[in-house]
Image 1 (cartoon, rainbow, N blue to C red):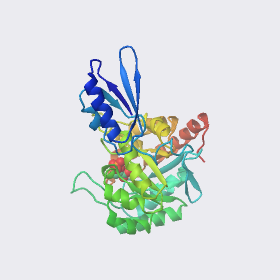
Image 2 (image 1 turned 90 degrees about the vertical axis):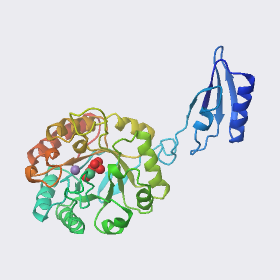
Image 3 (image 1 turned 135 degrees about the vertical axis):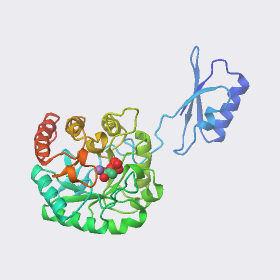
Image 4 (image 1 turned 180 degrees about the vertical axis):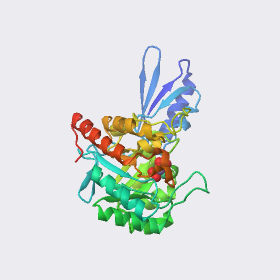
Length: 338
Ligand code: PEP
Ligand code: MN
């Protein structure tokens, strides 16, 4: 931690700052330039609240040098985390495609879409059985029936499956059917859920909250990792900004930002990020080019009649075309899509 001092600081104020830092357990090193003096405070604890120093008289600014998260950081683990699901590895050289409907609606729908995405080259089938909807009157998902259908469709077309778990009480049930637990954007800071999912061993996809910074996302990741589950991947799904032309604003730069700060794989979700079918395809290409370890894309054969997120689902032919383009993009950046 670096403490920048005000230029006109008095000796008394300086002594007070140093004695506070020592009281909090820091080793203090003073470094004086011609116009500015800074204090290097060594030994910051992850939970230290830097405002305790910021409010002292004579302090101009306090800058944290080490991250407040540990297990999620690249400095803790330099090599990329690789997550194995059946024959698929997420976080390795291959870009993994997760595709499927927003929600599991019925048997015919999920089997039809599973066949399409498997034919296109997806490795993982997505589909919500418990849906976190903005309106309590909107379709809430089929529940256990949806989990069963998702599992059966995945098994039939040799796809692993991912589905959302909304609350700790659902973990046991969802665990019986899924290969990956999804924690939705609205639950990114649901700490009881993060703690309980951290006690499982199955892979987890943690989605970035609507108004979360990358560091907030990494702090939530830390909750899961610190409870023991290291099979964790993160998902950029767009954030709330002042822009209204898209459902959210796709923060593509978070992909290289997270890769630099953390060893965890990053999946990009251009569907929820843009909310509009015609924007999903260019943004999917951009995310692959930016180095995403995987993409999660909503696909529907009859989006007009979809029970949720129809307007952002791409059509089967669009999915096939996109997969061809993604393979070329992956190749250009030295990766691959099988
Ligand atoms: C989803 O992927 O099904 C979903 C609800 O997305 P998000 O949590 O990102 O809104
Ligand atoms: Mn959706």
